[in-house]
Length: 241
Image (tube, rainbow, N blue to C red):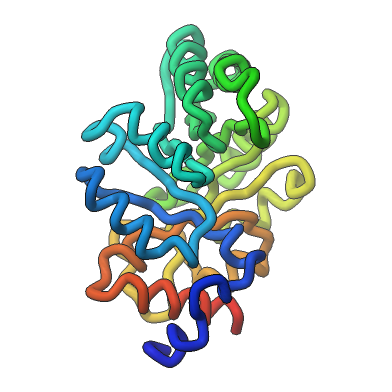
């Protein structure tokens, strides 16, 4: 699937239900490059994920900038600290208008509740849907040696008011009991035959959606290719089956 897919996916023709379930990971350290990439791939992705690399390079303004430009912004900061610090940091992030903020569930109940409260307080009075905390369960680069740990962390995310979780695609069956309560966000999927990089627990994007993923985070499988637009078109073609 190459140029033929792109020819069939003119601007505005990517199905809205597909675009809404794809988040583009801007894992770069340059704001200009990040904006260019986001603009080039706008028709394919409904959400922009900004992680530690770009956030460290550009600061909080990079979050606000993408929000101002109309994106749903996913602040992938993976907060993990004492509850007071996390609450204050989440409050700042909430004031910038982001849609999602990640926090490590390993931080425990008090910290997760502080994140939820801080994000809500910071976003008070802003327009749009309320932001949600996503609890990071087990990283996709780690082996899952203890399934009970995953279910424990998922249950904790639900009990503390998190809006969703981050989990690997193979973890979706274990988190299914919370499917109605939590948005399940899956990074690290790869098209069949593609390089997995440092991801260990992966599957293909269509399988992840079929197994209950609500939002797929797509990074190097598109952004690290020679032609990201064609790679994004191939991804959409794969999802449409």
